[in-house]
Image (cartoon, rainbow, N blue to C red; front, top):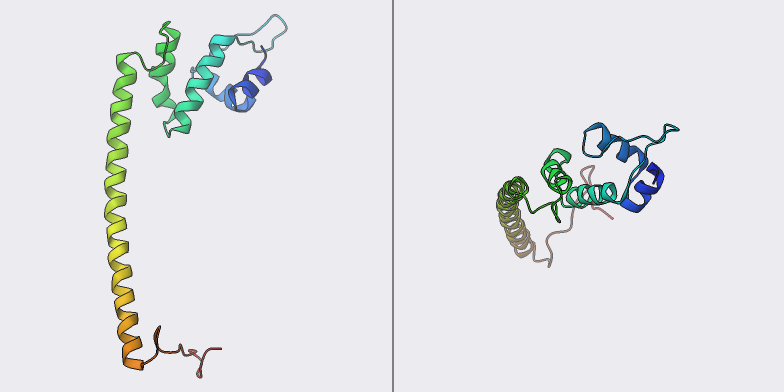
Length: 142
């Protein structure tokens, strides 16, 4: 198949296919007339790359999976090098989840503080929801 068909069947663009080829992730075969040619095995490689990218893997992180498929394994993640990448990615995700959890706790604390301050102002002003805002230029906001 030619590059356009491979790209369409793999859910990407011909430009991306050429880029993957330039990185050595896809083979660079040419027919007698100079057109790039691909087969079903190349489509399998492309789908593996795209799936991993959709999961947030960088292109270099896909290399062990591609090499595993090229070596004749039924799945790209059945080789030890692929499992190492999975473990490393899980570690990165766990670290990010930890960071996001900490940030979420800070934002939740800030919200509680802001709501408490607003409620205290409302109680002082005797107005539910807080005192009526005033325009910085003088007078009341409309």
